Length: 255
Ligand SMILES: C[S@@+](CC[C@H](N)C(=O)[O-])C[C@H]1O[C@@H](n2cnc3c(N)ncnc32)[C@H](O)[C@@H]1O
Image 1 (cartoon, rainbow, N blue to C red):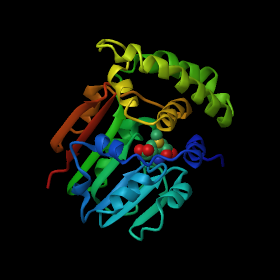
Image 2: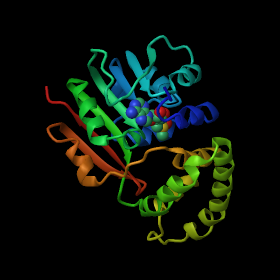
Image 3: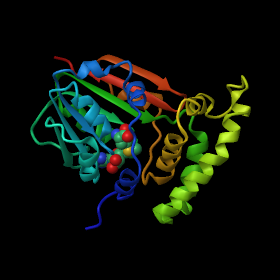
Image 4: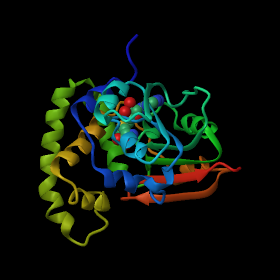
C-alpha cells in the first residue's frame, strides 16, 4: 500500500529544524517548563526536534507521525524517555492518556481537522492540556487563492528535488522585498508581520518554510471561530494570532 502523505518523509529527511525559540513562540503562552514531569504526546512530530526538546523536561514523550518516525528517531538522539511511533494522530490510541498534548503545524494538514482535534481531546487526562498551532484562514488569502491552486495544478506533480530548487528561487526572490518595501511602516502589506519574522531567521530556515508550504499535500485554513469551537468545554482557554497568519490555541480538560 502507498504510504500516506509520503511528501513529509522526504521533507524531514532533507531538512532539519533545530530553532528552539520558534517552538516556544508556537506553544505560547504555555512554556517548556509546563511539561516538567509529565506524560506528553507530540501529535505529528515531523523531524523530532521538538520531542527531544520537551523530553529534557517531561517524564516521557510519545511522538507520533504518519511516516517520519524513523528519521525523527535519528534526529532526536538517544534520549531514553522518547518513543517515536508511526500512526495517524486522528486515530492513534494505545490506551494511554496524557497530561499534555501539543500539535504544532499538523492539525491543518490532517484529512479532517475537526475529527483530529476531537480525537486528541479524548486522549487527555482530566486536567490535561491541549496545545495547538494551526494556519489561520484570516491573513492567508494569497496562499489560499493562489498558492493552493498552483500546487494542485502543477507543483504537487513535480519531483521533490525540483520543488526544492523552486523553493530556493522563490525564497531568494522574496529577500529583496523583505529587506526594502517590507521595512517601511506599511502594515497593510500582505504577510507584513510574518515577513518581519523572516528578518530574525537565517536564510536556510526561511527556505524550509517556503518548501514546507509548497510541499504540504493537504492544507486547511482555520477560522478563529472554528479554532475556538475546538476548545468548547475546556477551561483556561487561550487563543491568539501569531504573525497574522496562524492561531495559537490551548485549553485544559476539566477535572
Ligand atoms: C509541517 S510538519 C510539522 C512537524 C512538526 N510538528 C514541526 O513543528 O515542525 C507536519 C507533520 O504532520 C504530519 N502529519 C500530517 N497528517 C498527519 C496525521 N494524520 N497523523 C500523524 N501525522 C500527520 C506529517 O507527516 C508531518 O511530519
